[in-house]
Length: 484
Ligand SMILES: *[C@@H]1O[C@H](CO)[C@@H](O)[C@H](O)[C@H]1NC(C)=O
Ligand SMILES: *[C@@H]1O[C@H](CO)[C@@H](O)[C@H](O)[C@H]1NC(C)=O
Image 1 (spheres, rainbow, N blue to C red):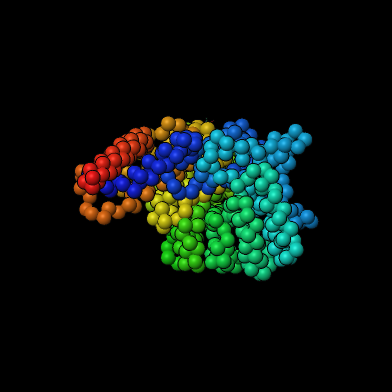
Image 2: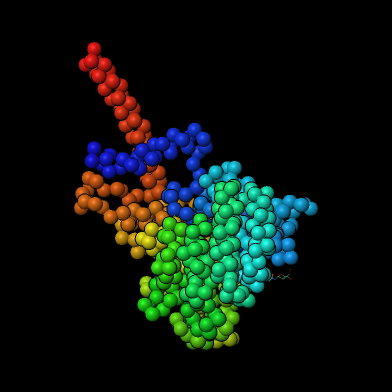
């Protein structure tokens, strides 16, 4: 009975969700109650060979939210617009990407689908103009609301990079609050979600965001916890270190702690995880801080200097004859991988990135801070085809995990890590009220075991419910008999 009472709240929840779910539709999506926000960079469809990612490559079961990136701003109309009508829309025999993504909700009712406006290439100046004018802002708010509803999106994600920066004005900080406030008022009439991508650099946070105010109006703040270092530094550094020395603001932990200090509620903070690394070329030995050129190198699929998708990184590292070696850094939870020296150029190629272990540790961090969950930029550079070897050290830093959960599929290793790690981290962090006794211990088995356990708990719930019902009937009978 001891165990039963300990489990009771979850048990009843499971019971009610179970019966409710069964009567409507089977439950879809992740088995935890944290958010996993998945961005799709929809231009990934144009990448060559196995790098090409179409919406039908997306697995809705691995995310709670998906964000279609990006739409643009037509400042002359104060309107959101498609940046790739052929890909996004159905008109003129287009592929109808918007409706293809939002259509996934029919088979996956848990899924929330948002449209993102902005992104790096959109710049900042036109957004600055939009928010500085009451009339333009008002028109935009109405138009964007009907636009997202037209395609059956559940919400809008603001990806203005960034207010006050890159051609923006100081007044953007205040005007951005006004935009979020007015969007909130409009969206509340339709139950739409309003979220925003938020820069993680201290300077950007300080100048661009009135954190307390925007937190009132946004449902979630998607913190872009990456690009802390890159080839632009002219030396080798980690893309997204989890921690850094106390005087160094360039870490995930600093960004999150800083936003919390500025008044962001933990329940609205979502930690961004990069499914990519930053690349460097150096004539030195390929160690941290070695002088490097300003450009880095590009990958065969993503073809962007200084950037490699995780799928490109893991393919190289899975190739035993490639000559690449990797090195785990326990301080930052980052991996540095380097090539052999090129005999012609004398250069060593370096990439710093997040492995499954990095991702698992960051999930543990997010859970320890009681945050809403994590965000991913972006699912199209996970090993979505399952080509690479799986990492074996993923849960090395989880004290209570004896062996990694069994996987049914080798695809999406990083996304699967997020969902496993979320369950495992919640368990890891649940400090027992009483000293643990063996009788009371929750088994640490595979995901399959966990599912069986959940089913068992539901059956137990049904059993108990019947018992209570019976007892209730007995009690009534007893009362009737007594007072007769
Ligand atoms: C801003 O708007 C102008 C006018 O429509 C347009 O020509 C320009 O390309 C926009 N800027 C960006 C970075 O998209
Ligand atoms: C593995 O790496 C070697 C050396 O760089 C290369 O020649 C070979 O094509 C690679 N194999 C695959 C399957 O990519």
